[in-house]
Amino acid sequence: MRVLLVTVHLRCGGAERVMSWLAARLDALGHEVTLATWFLPIDDFYALPPGVARVGVRDDTRQARFQFHVDRVRFIRRIRQLAKDADVVLAFLPDANVATLLATIGLGVPVVVSERNHPVWSGARRRSGRLGGWLVRWRAAAFVVQSADIAEAFRLRWGITGAVVIPNAPAIAIAAATHRGPVVLSVGRLVEAKDHATLIRAWARVASTYPQWTLRIIGEGPLKQALGTMVQQLGLEHRVEIIEPRVDIGTEFQAASIFVLPSVTEGFPNALLEAAASGCACIATDCPGASADIVDHGSAGLLVPVGDHVALAAALESLVGDAGQREELGEAARVSAGRFDADTVVGQWVQVLSHARRAGVLRT
Image (cartoon, one colour):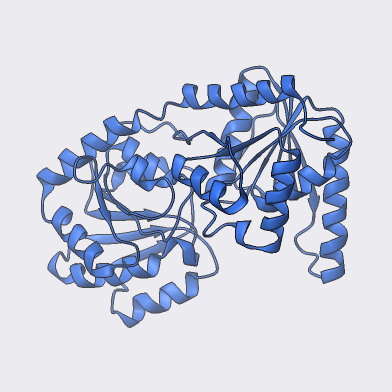
């Protein structure tokens, strides 16, 4: 099967990680894979196997507004050109979904689109999102989301019925930890939706009681400076680390004792799943998205209300101060994460793409 994958970029991020993982898995299964992005491959954080053809359009150094719109048109034209040689196309994220559905009009090539976030935070609330909703109903061969909760949200917002639910699988192999240190870990882009500010406020209530423990936040994004300032204002310079993402993130999951996902909203949080798979004791907000699908409160982790730094601090203190509870919840999380088997998940993707190929487009 000749598969064209389309997204905006392969910089560090959850959707980008899944797209690169899926490209590699499809390639390993013998499919002919091309991955096209708006931005050039020079921006890639994730590596692809040699068998995956890589195409990019836009040079991010060109900042002029007119050039942005010119590149958008070039992106659509490039997708159209590539799609002519594909059996099926899969697009991730609102901007790529819209561009791909427009680019393939009249080609007779089936397009599967996937939203990777809950619509309360994704492009579904922007003008491009409304256009995307109309295009999905009109043209998409299949619409894929990551949880039943997200499928219902898009049904209410866009009127889409029959969404296909495919969860994520751990994108990395994580060996059993031999030693866990006094580290509370959080991994995610430094953006408002991830709400690391609430985590830092919560840590400020706990840190003085447990001076040997460190909060380590791994991520990049526009809020890095603001979060660093908050750390200084709270006097936590020696208790909080904010560091750049790393490709071998599995070693961080193995080294940490506790993982925290403080998000306001999520799609299907890769970092939480991989932390659980590594055996970390996990705390997550009970936010819109799939966090509650991964963390079964009380038995395989702890859930706290969104934006509540007091409740988060209490959850942190209960785990930092109780090694037995950490071990119990971590082992339960590891077992629970086994539900999201990589072979099963990639099999679901192949099934959707194969069905779309056979069924063809809804409208040309």
